[in-house]
Length: 444
Ligand SMILES: Nc1nc2c(ncn2[C@@H]2O[C@H](COP(=O)(O)OP(=O)(O)OP(=O)(O)O)[C@@H](O)[C@H]2O)c(=O)[nH]1
Ligand SMILES: [Mg+2]
Image: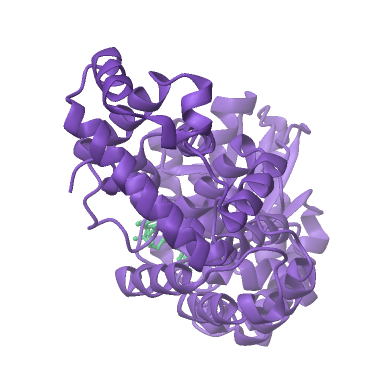
């Protein structure tokens, strides 16, 4: 599924051309693809629709960068918007001591495991002394599981296998924790297959009894369309302060994250990335966004282009190309702009769906050779290629360490390119030149 999507988006972007401003028309196809990317990443359909509308509103009228396609640029906007929606910056550290944390969530979502993981992370990073309190009285094994985890990590532990009253277990655990010098007290609660009212009542009472600083919803990243309801119901019942997203090491694309954050406004604080106690980290919105979109490489390509391209220069160049008074000096400048992006191969390979395309050392070498030949010309020659007679060509070949036939070939290709530019309008002309730079000059 993943490859299929990247492939499809790649195709859409290759088909998009045009300069000027982003319009509804040149964005429509890309947005359609991104919408289906969101849906197949399990983003809730209403959330996906709202999100696309927002992106559209943000894009229309934006200037198109010269060096990337409108589609690629749309993806960048979408990515930025998504990072923002997922919380922007990574959330601030938890430092208040003592800190009381309550874990809630569906059955099997990872509450017990995450209790230990969170305790470990906070003890390592912020010097907390953790105590784990077992508030799951429905499975005897649940308390054993938590106790084992606590023992392995040398955390304090509290459990009461004889009590059936969760709030009073929590209260006793809290008192004992504080007495024994714990600065972090984590309450692990029971889960259910479905959210039922008894469970909700119980967590509410526990919450009222221990008054936690943080209430974290522990949610499996593979939750899918259901995620919205789960997050909403828990939020209404116990007023969540954060979400812990588990099982990110699995193949879920993680759209649940976007849905849950969107409907509750509650930030995603941590992510579980494996079965081991150390497989746990602060949540990173940027990584999540590229996971959901599967377009991380396009985003860095556009970022690179934004950093390195001189917009004014590019515009001037496009105009010259249309007027067809584009000379070898312009050609050299244009080529150097492309080079700033990295080797030609690395640029092309960043494009989705282009992984299989071979633009290797050969093309890179050809580009360097073309550059060397033009650099061996005088400025006057570059501006007036027509004066390049045999002896000038020989001098240039010697100066750049190539054969005279390489110089001839370059000039021939350049002449053809200029002819074609006269016929073509901006977007296509630019494409043409890119392909000529990639492999057409000299040689072939
Ligand atoms: N691969 C992977 N497995 C995880 C992760 N988090 C939890 N698990 C596994 O998921 C299973 C359930 O985890 P628990 O911590 O017992 O879940 P729970 O929410 O406490 O379950 P109940 O108490 O039964 O409601 C266990 O096998 C964990 O090892 C994760 O981030 N990655
Ligand atoms: Mg559990």
